[in-house]
Length: 250
Length: 343
Ligand SMILES: Nc1ncnc2c1ncn2[C@@H]1O[C@H](COP(=O)(O)OP(=O)(O)OP(=O)(O)O)[C@@H](O)[C@H]1O
Ligand SMILES: [Mg+2]
Image 1 (cartoon, rainbow over the protein chains, first blue to last red):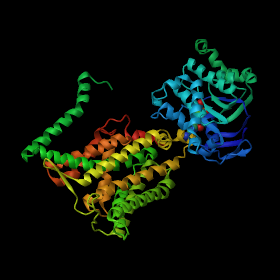
Image 2 (image 1 turned 180 degrees about the vertical axis):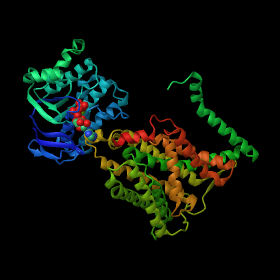
Image 3 (image 1 turned 45 degrees about the vertical axis):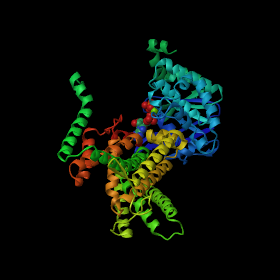
Image 4 (image 1 turned 45 degrees about the horizontal axis):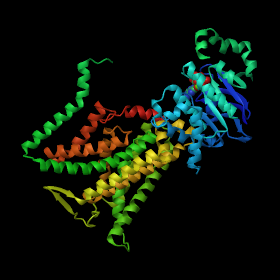
């Protein structure tokens, strides 16, 4: 469904992605794990055309999307839920969700349908219904993350790119978010999930890629990565050494 | 920073204290000139009339600033163009009744000014959209000077005449209420300003497009990630601002004999109003405009008429020095919000 071939992305002279290739098939949840600064967000932003790659190609359902604008990529059905949520803090929760469907609505789509989609999101995240008239900036971090995911869903994406949905959230909330992602997966949603919480990510994903300093270092099914010694040491080990946190989280 | 209780109390009392002191000074100076309630009522009426114009010009600043992070100093040029183009269209031969001729020239002027606003965005702001806000602001200053220079070539240095809306002649109908003189044009100004502001509030609160523009203001990247085309919103902001500028120029034209150079002062006053209101807040812009109108009329009234502008610009400097977030208490300073919306 989404195929990335050898992309390299730069910030000025700094190369943040080095010949990255990967693939996401329809209905799959694919996770990208890696440490701070590995280039995970850059990868998503290259797909979304926020930071277009300097070389390489990106294909979506067979069509090349490498040179499209940010808006056009969204129009293709590729929707990114950015890092640190980035909700429209001064607009209400309702308006945030409505704007998620902006492309459809401004193209003549019906509000009634958007309303229906919103009902589904309220079912996924009931707290959002209660808060729907509140400015998004007044929500807690976890609620904002739910809103950001909901806003992404409102676009009826074919694939959802999630950038660290667990960032800065208490374990209980991380669990709530991942429960929702499980539910989306049940509905057949294709998801590319960037995470630092490798354990949670591998628990959810079908396959995963491990990134280090701009490169894909490892890839494989979640099970195989979970039992991989290198992954255990570098990404899962830390949690094992904090049994308390782990206990509270799961 | 920790504040002691007394310091805190002083902080919360500072604004009312300054306001009271100001009123005391005004009343003292007024008493020396033997001013009674009638004079003050007159200053207030005139102040609210000028203030409504400033409010509308300030809204133009706020809309462009909110969406693009640019302080558009060409706004004053749009005000001038609105007035001068209305004059020119009105002088043309038209097979219409005088009232219809006025209406047609007003509509043509708003349309032409909006078109110019759109061209300004496409030709000067859009190509430089990746530059720093400061560069963009300087570009708008250049645009202002260019438009004013062209206006001098087209219209010459003379003052022109635009009829008042009620009488369709130069001389306006005048109402006298207990000795206070109010020109009929004042009611047009208040009415049109109110309608425009209500429409804007509706637009930004209730319509998808209005919400999309606000989303750009809050977080440009996130807005693009839901498919909002930022460049179109920027264009729309300039279109709306230039239309607002044109309307302000037209409704004040009967009162001031427009010439090619009215844009500087009116534009800057609108800027002062926007700054007083906190720059990001439409309601603040309106209150800022009315405050500015009242303050300059009353303080010039009790001292000297020629001092109006000095009071207005002193208020600007004082606001920027001591309350850069605006007198009407917005949360962030203008500079902070600007950085965020362009991030
Ligand atoms: N706007 C930018 N300008 C310059 N360099 C950048 C920019 N954004 C990211 N980088 C650099 O690119 C590299 C990859 O950053 P990126 O944000 O993609 O990492 P990440 O894997 O998402 O990290 P994190 O887990 O902390 O979010 C880092 O070295 C970072 O310093
Ligand atoms: Mg990141």
